[in-house]
Image (tube, one colour):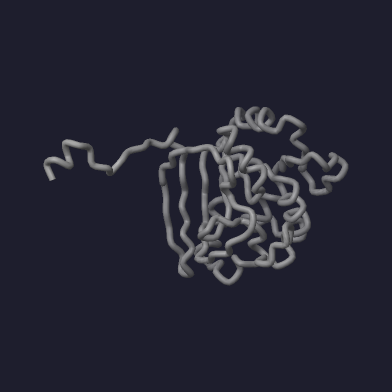
Length: 213
């Protein structure tokens, strides 16, 4: 399976608590709900398309608990997002939860060695193994080179504080833009594939260039 990460972020890379003031106040974060005024029909269509090829989901503990409190209450099997989330397997990365704590049907703990378990899941045939939100899990998967594609919805907001997608210690990587869109409210949607290590160059003049000038 192809491992994809889809996340909402601000212009300064913050992905914490996009959906509401009480969603994630950890660290004294006071900007919860920054996504809501900008989320439009174009973004909704992209998200519906994104869930189409999903075969299973990987979620960090906090995102899992947030989703589990909401999506089982959306019981329309024709809803393109709720239908997938409620019906498909959900693998949870957590050091504190027990299997008995996972009340959402189809949920399973990944266990202690998350990278190894994820690598094994990727070997299975099928569509996509999708990660949504789950900042800590995403950063682990990026460090381990397990992410195949990033789908970033960047909103026209700057917050200055909050959990960022690329935190300190992010592994250097070159990216290749494979798709881009702009929505009616100015959300920039970019789909990126990994393209190995970054390449470097310089615009500095060497001695021969300086002499010719």
